Structure formats: structure tokens, C-alpha cells
Image (cartoon, rainbow, N blue to C red):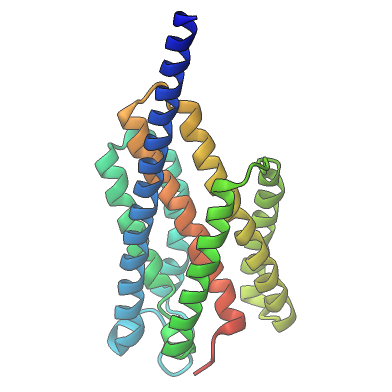
Length: 245
């Protein structure tokens, strides 16, 4: 009986350690993500409100993108794939620096919203996105339902969304644009909950190893995933809630 009680007490203490570590890990993820969002907001505001900087990306008269503008638009996508390929060769500090560089480039690429939409509607949509994201992420973290099966469906939808968005750059169809925005909101709402649960489950699965390097890189990758969910949810909601200039 004594041995059983000792084992049970040890298991309980271990479980408590994992719970505390999980909370610290998720707090770190949200912290890195929040800093990334602040960097993006600052870069977007700086380029979006300064005419000489915005002129580097778009023709002031026709609003058509320059060569640099096209490069900046696709650069975040290239950086995401490069980050995934290089993460194992980067140190934790190097990966975090890369993430903040990516957040800066993302801010520049979406800086046009300060020209297309009113500042009030941008702030309003950001607050609505924050509330929606917090609710979806909290549900993903606390739900007992296994939503891992959503992954393949959401990823296929995301690939289709990217292809449709690229095609519509050239077609410029309002109907396709509306459909993309509506589907995009649903996909990234689902991904927010899915990614949060996956981050939680991944930590629990690796908790016994307690590899500090893995934990640091995992937090940065987790922050990147949730950051992308937030930014894309915000951009798609802005299409519905934003007031045009």
C-alpha cells in the first residue's frame, strides 16, 4: 500500500509539473506571437501612412503594384517555406530573429490596408479578430473533443484558398473575392482551434524528454502558426467589416 501511495504521489507530482510546464510553454508561444503582431502592426502603419514608402510598392496614381511590390507580396510565403526547411539548422535565438524578420516583411506586404480602409475600421476589425481568436484558441485548448481529424481537411482547404487567391489576382472577380473571404474566415477559425490543440498535445507528448532546445524552437514554430492564423483571420474579416476610404 505504501509503495502504491508513493507511486501515485509521484505520478500526481509529475502531472502537476507537466501542467505547469504546459502553461509556461503556451504563455511563451502567445508572448512571441504578440510581439510579432506588434512588429507587423508597426511596419504596416509605417509603410501604409508614409507616401514615399508606399510609392515604392504601388504607383500612387494607378495603385498598381511595382516590381518591388510584387516581390514583397510573395516574400512572406517564401519565408514561411524557408523557415520550415531551415528550422533544424537554426539556433533558438536565430529562429526567433527570423520570425520577427518575417513579421516585419508581413507588415510591409499588408501596409496597403491603410490606404484602402479607414483607420477606425482597421482598429475595430483588429479588436474583433482578437476576441474571436482568443475564444477559438481557448476552446481548442480546453475542449476534450479530439479535433486532430480537422487537419487534413483544413490544409486541403488552405491550399485551394491560396491557389484561388493567386488566380483571382489576374481575374479580379468580385464574386470569387467574396467567396474566398468567406471561406477564408471559416478555414482560419478552424485552424486557430486546431493549431492550439495540436500545440498542447505536442507538448504533452514531448514533456518527459524536456529537451530545452526543442521546447524553445517549438514555441517559436507554435507562435508562427498562431500568428498566421490571426493575421489571415484579420485580413479576411477586414474584407467584410472594413470601411473603404
